[in-house]
Amino acid sequence: MRSEKLAKMSSKKEVVKILWYSEKTVETFLKFLYTDLIDDEDATTNLLRMAYRFDVGRLFNATSGKSG
Image (cartoon, rainbow, N blue to C red; front, side, top):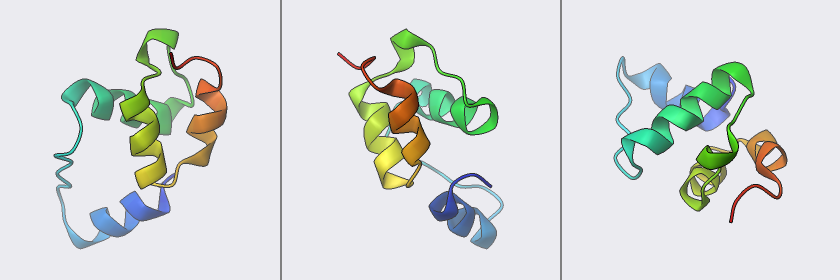
């Protein structure tokens, strides 16, 4: 898995519930984990918060200058 923290959570359970973010933010985050791609309109402050929480530093690089 591309996020150590998410890997630890998922190793303990079959389903990981992420309740702190909107469905759209979680979908964008997961899409990025699998593809390393992000659309400009999806680069939000909440997405960066999620990247920080789950220690996905490369998402910060991918969104550099995109978040308004």
